[in-house]
Image 1 (cartoon, rainbow, N blue to C red):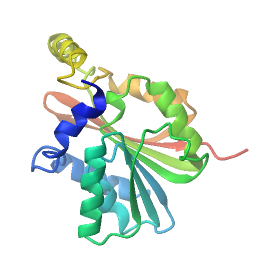
Image 2 (image 1 turned 90 degrees about the vertical axis):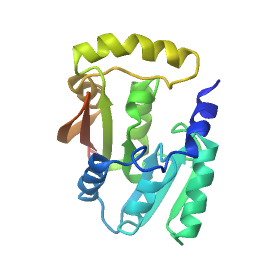
Image 3 (image 1 turned 180 degrees about the horizontal axis):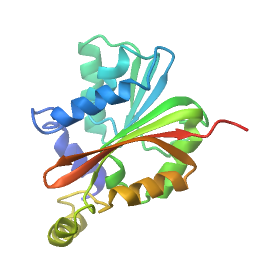
Image 4 (image 1 turned 60 degrees about the vertical axis):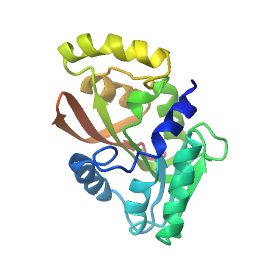
Length: 213
């Protein structure tokens, strides 16, 4: 089973209480709002059913949500229509779409995404390219490599289940590894908050693209 079909299977249950947005997620969204204003053009990368995009839409100029699950995008579009949110667009796409033009976004959000991509440096390089100089990359990431015992006892089963399509690909990275990946792609980390979400540490990171010189 390919990755898109697997995430399509999850789509109908994504908005179930306790599945997608928990208490910590809501707190982190509130933290992210500090970096948004009414002129912000925002990309929500891995938007799923659009909950975060619609939550921030009222405080920004425009939100573009992308996800490679067509079912997730279908649900997001229906929700936007239902709630009559006009400044959000949802597109079935990957981060590497040519339609995501260079230096076209003020902020890129990636909530619970970076631990699921197979080529993090490539993804981060693309994110840097589509951000305007001085723009913000805001992410939350479960760092499943932060605790050695968790990596040891969970890593092998997760790896095997991902190979047969039952679970997605997962990167077991630590907080320090994640920060290194981000700074190596010419970002400056300006805020980092770690939350202990048993048994995983989740980290909220705000990184800024360098201003043009």
